[in-house]
Length: 270
Length: 345
Image 1 (cartoon, rainbow over the protein chains, first blue to last red):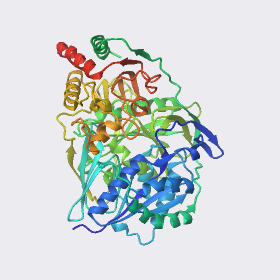
Image 2: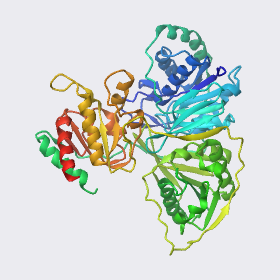
Image 3: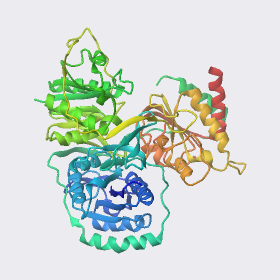
Image 4: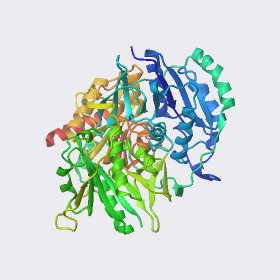
């Protein structure tokens, strides 16, 4: 039986993917217009990481933390939903929202916060998160967190982890060509940046929600406020893509004529 | 003055550099020429001697980290190799392909050498300074960024430049190759192989000219009030076989599998394009039975010519995003397309 693990999931919050986004200028640099009032969700890939972590903890009794950076009010709003999915201890950081702050600053704060979790045993630590975010989408933050924590086994684009009896684990990572690379790691500590994994979103469970809320609200009240400084990153321009295509809508063609047109188009060199 | 290091690596076979690596070499040569910068190429491979031919005339200096440990794409060894190459070349700008192998390690390498990193770079420009273009919010907002701090690492999205082709008649036809030693930490991870999804055939083909996107409509009730999942699966697999297309899928269709609904048996999350999927690059894209922003906006951002077959003439997401939208039953259209493609075989 593998030893109990300590799993720390890093997850940000992002605007609901169905929202229309428009860039704007704020005193601290580029931002999303009305971002604070847009409905927000837990970052989708990081949410996969959270659900996979919970499934792992269910099979192998483990302590699960969720470290999340965002404006306190927004975090509270998102956690009302997330807290009903799986059991975890929230470690909130009150800070700015959005994809434009520098990943280097974000990773420094996350690493310091993880290192300061009371009683954290780094020899049993697995750091989870999304392999990219839906905001910055750089795939850099989690890797830098691992590097700052001195973790030398990292995996990105993870779709599965299987613990083995000797404490080692097998990881499937996405690589080019629709394949997975299979690796065996001797054991924690390790960083795993998750792709979608294989689990569906857990159903809401009010009992889990009530249990999480008992520790979540005090944690949110105690959340440290932080600023993200970047002295090196400068934005030359931030804009919406301008390309708008002239769409030809064909309502009256028969399947035969559509098929003929498509086959000719497929065969034509672009 | 800037000095540029472009990092490259061997493919799975170990006998050639990856196409993405050669694309990065092209980008680096263009940037070096524009800035008047010194250019060095770094190679990570078990046996780089076989690979340097592909880099003839590319740059005056090649640095290589070699050894069996570097045959595997693994964080600890790759990070040590890239760190050693950076410390040897002392560049101000490091370019590398956005491959799974280098994406796994390059931020850590940048941190180790006191640098900064930006990823998914689609273009590098700027008159007096180096400016890099990349997308935010899943290809919805484009930004151009610059940094003063060096070394600055830039990971280049694949498909944005032509791969470098060696020309033995040009200068630097035989560049100096210098072996660099990387100090390895204790290796705790072993790569044991590769696994393809459990499917009848490989449906993800990054080099295909056409991306075929299957939406959730394929598994919905048809005019006869029944679903026809098996027929849909046959039509799609036959189309992929005859056209050589790569298969993408909308999130809603892939998610149906997890929710216990009928789903196309060959689809996995690896096929998913869009918000939580990939944003592939193909010259052409054909979307069928899709509705929503994910396939038409996010997933199609880097598709050249775009066509769609849909029953919804009012789908707002296709307007302005697709070149042609056919309002028709995809079952009937694809069946006839398959017949026509079959005649050509």
